Image 1 (cartoon, rainbow, N blue to C red):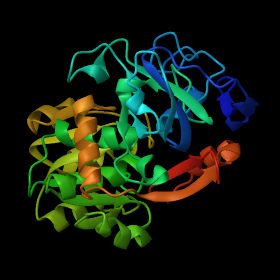
Image 2: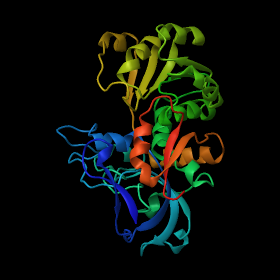
Image 3: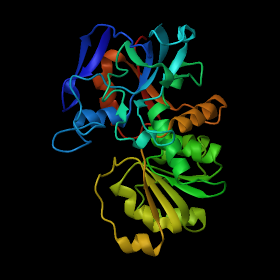
Image 4: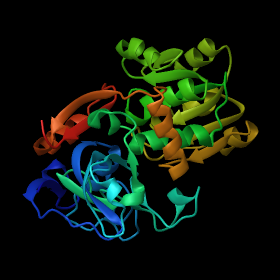
Length: 346
């Protein structure tokens, strides 16, 4: 099979196209012919070494073992089943829950042995992948590309919204609202949980599209009076912030939160370190949440909401698998709206 693998930590030149044997499913696994694989920050940061310390990166302390095939947002067709898997799985169109874990129900994402496809296991930048049968779910939509854009960013966004216990008519600010996680935060908070959403983007040319996704107000982080604008459009401080930016908007976020407000972050694209005046946090009774991925039950609830049309796929563009370097480079450009997807066949 054709695959794209990462040779080691570094720039996109560490991605190489190779021919590898098609993997054999173990007794509890299935072999999936990959149809689409969306790109996440996860595999880029893994390649760049942005996770971890001392030159190691990945979801486990020992770091990634190279070479590794990245890719975790995967849809495809089951073409072979392991000896303990029901034959009825053959031919099914599936979307992959992206990690294994021995954690009990509801705690899978914070188990010490949580291992990620595309980091600890070979992933979806390939024509075939093997994965445990019980972690393969029916696609929520009939289209492979559209169904591939939710797994990691969608579950992360869903978990964030559940963590802050979003309620109807609360006001939630979403940073990085045009990105993969951000655009889903907007949809989930507004269209599933009924909150009022203030979307923060760079380019206000995206305003119409952001409002179509459910945003009530769209503001630019480039404004010199952003905090005042947020409080003005809301008629006062806001209830919660869903953040993927980190340092660049942290001070503003704490400034506009009401007393008892909640700040939840799952990313740091605008800076991984920040300054926190503890007085702001305790005098305003602010709760801080760190968040990434989610649980299997949240994944199922998200797939149900997608099937019901409450959450829609937002796709910026697609690339053939062979152009993985170009796709990852493009992914880092500002001003995109939605996901970038690799296709194994055009």
